[in-house]
Image (cartoon, rainbow, N blue to C red; front, side):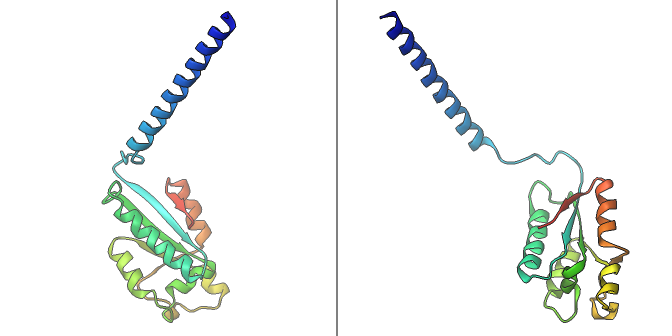
Length: 154
């Protein structure tokens, strides 16, 4: 008899514990709205090294989404570092000029790797004249990361 009473007490205790944990989990889930942007400014490098149209469009969409995030709005500095196959985004013979100019108008730095254009035998006159250049894309990312910039590689 004592054994049954102890077991039922233990069962009730376990049930109330699970109910409490479930209520706590539901409370935390519904109250969570993401991290709070407490700093005055944030810096991020988006790395683009793919010429795939879906990756290019996704990267540009990710940049816009970041700039429009209400927590980061007006606090975010963005650099798009392009190297390797990603160079197509800056080529005049590809359809990205309007989107790139829109990003630049929002303050996004558009940087092309000079190693890439040299290795792929691309001249600067084949690329949009409103972009910037860095000696190496990876070097730019390394330096920016050490300066505290977040690195995003979609």
